[in-house]
Image (cartoon, rainbow, N blue to C red; front, side, top):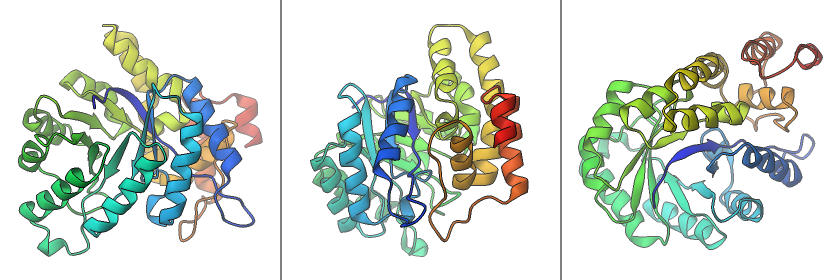
Length: 303
């Protein structure tokens, strides 16, 4: 599998009364993002509240998404878990309902026992056992276990490992991963503030949550860069960087969801134990979306 372009790690809307997934809102959101020109969608990633979803919910989300996502777009499912067998089970289940690939974080609960050899064996066992490609997920801010360049050099040679998403936001680390990645192993940036810089360095694209709030603009960064229009690409990136920093990075899932509400999509509330934003943070989201030109004065005021 070749990964390129802008992929969105989408949110999961919940019914405010029951707390169950809201399927109509979920599919409506997906259609809006696809209409903006994104190349792919990640279901049950960090922004999708993956740790708070039941396994059967992840499978159901992928099935609903496959009804909306055309075959020429990439549908990825987050299937990370602590047990190798659990990752394999969920990965097979989402593949059966239409996932094109899986995004798998490293297991970290027994962190002291998770040396490079153990993690390598975990990923290779998963890649050997499932019918769709694996994308490694390096996200040390949530999972305190990094996929090092040396480990990527080994795993990236596996025929069923398609690439890695690096969410560190550290360009030095991204550069080391790019140097270590085998030719058929794509490196994707996970920090929306670094999309332009990552493309300059040779990344294939990004899986970036800021794109949920600004899908057309995020796609524009990629397409302008690929067309050689560095100035316009950099200018759009300049608008997106504060949105990433102040909403995605600082306020997290609840911030992204409130931003979607202001933009006319269904964000809704995060699932407990995550808490909704306080009033000060809500004003921050309004302010940053307004500054970036993503919402009008009227929408900002009504929010």
